[in-house]
Length: 286
Length: 276
Image (cartoon, rainbow over all chains, first blue to last red; front, side, top):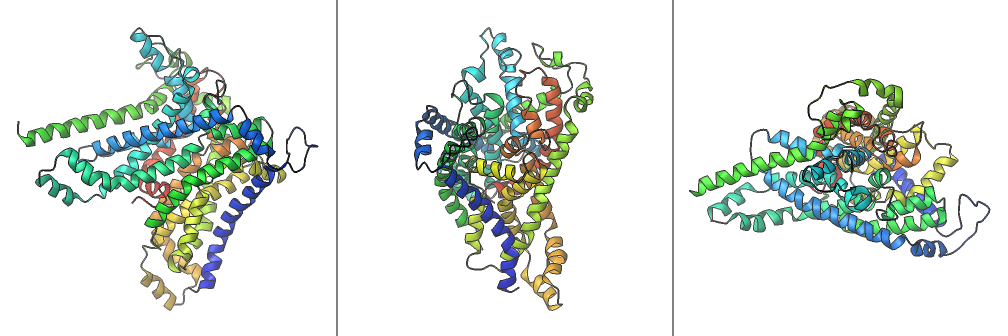
């Protein structure tokens, strides 16, 4: 195949992705510098950086940044640690291991809106939810999780969905570990902890880094779970950056300010993406 | 107690705890399934009922109350359509990249993957306004195109990896026989990597079926997918929990089964090929 033909075959995918990236991105940059409010279409014109200033001084800005960091940080710690523990637990031959595996990863395939309503109605409801029933049965006061601990409720929902992801990745990676090396260490009298620390953990270092980076990308833009359960509230207690921008745009109709916020989110995600692309690049052989 | 016995006991403990953890993780799904066969009153009974007389009422009433089939059809069209469109674009490109790699091929692939990392909310307004201008708001067309684009990078990557496993000699032999590029793709590359293509498509369908951001923001009553239908149940406080369970069970069951079948591609696709 000659290079010209190869280029023609590649052109559609490259052009489409280029358009998908450049057109909306430049529009976002443009909108972020003009006055653009859907309810006041007659007010327009270049405003410089004042949309950024407006977004930055919004009373919900810092709380939403803090919420985003707590959300991402907590979900990451929970999913990576429990993912590691579970993957190590099931990394041994036993009967019906396939069934355990299937049960474990199922939550990952539940749609986010179902996930949110499932937890909201079934477990966290203060009247008939299972947590309320459990609390009453031991004589405690049932807790209204979503209004008292909104952010933590979201963290639980997202962790339930993403721990299976971490398990799946670590499990796959453990299967490619050198078994002979492990047996040799066992014969040399290395203990469980020392084998884990010196052999397994280094082997898992890259998968762990990848799981962390990928989850960061996905969790920076958590949306559906918040949209369906708390709507960012009460107040702004469960508003993350994505939800704040969404609220500015489609609920506040202020496209200029929302675009300024959108650019902020893009920059944040890109900082993570740089590291991720570097790792992917190392494993991509062409 | 010898070391061997000790090892054995630890092993048994690990197996038991694996089962326990797996059951805990699966429990919400099981409970949702169970609730879908309860009446509304049984669904919110305190204490919760484990044994009850099952009813199919929720399932038979779904269509009457919610237009379930319209939303399900929209989900099918958008997730299958988006996948098909992405495949049509990706197969020739991945073929060219795999069999005629240039100096830039790796950079192009990495760049493609990096577009997947762009947060959707950053381009929400432009996409929304473009759809509005083109009269595409709340249409399946808009979702199909967007879905094709958001999955194109990972489809490209997985197909690229599959195609590279095809021995170049086979292609060279066919070229000697005078096969054109199109027949090379349709008669050699696609048949040889059919399994890989099918499971990649399945993974793409799973991801698109569960896509929430664009489905919620770009659709309402006409092109809404099941994700959006379920989201519309968020306001009335648990009034329809049994019915919602039935809808959710129907909406999730096929895709969970698909998911089980595509675990390997899922690992490759979602880690961008960095974990094998």
